[in-house]
Length: 261
Image (cartoon, rainbow, N blue to C red; front, side, top):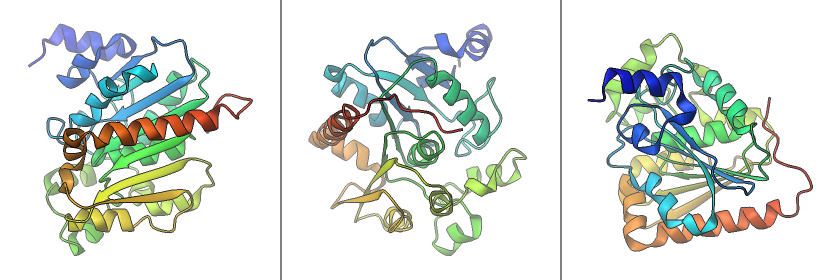
């Protein structure tokens, strides 16, 4: 367990927290604005951080692209609906905090990435903050309890009960299809899912037909698709290809990306 003084320091000074602080549960967010270029990648951790570590490890595989980065973890394990400890208490609070943090620099390319719960967050915050693109692996796309029960999606039901009891939970964000259909956005959403996982297919197909949503089908890997893609080298190809395409598009822009209000 992290020491109380280290935890307090990271919570009071989130901008000086490190990736290791986020990984060890000392801090919920760690920004790295070391690069002088105008590209930023924001990575959201999932519910089971150890299993989904490859989504953080991708920074090592894309290091030649010289990226600015932000790591975020849902320490309260409620699909980010209880905010970031010491910073904010709900989804809107996280969006406002990220808007201010990202607004410290002018970026022409902003990519949000996540897997599972992190994929849900990447899609939601990518939309709310007008990101250039989103790469979501096996994301959860609906949190409504009866809808999940009907499909037998009960693996994280303990966390679901915690979410439903949270006063800070914003139900207007429970269904990503409804959120996507309620807003016009130029953001591109790339959803990667696996045919051998019934629930992941359901969640991905829930977004079919939404504007700027592109579904990418993989044959195997299940809910641990990111790990499978990492081990095969496909994760690097997907991320580099997406970031390179975004870079080509951003080169055509004459103004930096503006965070949505």
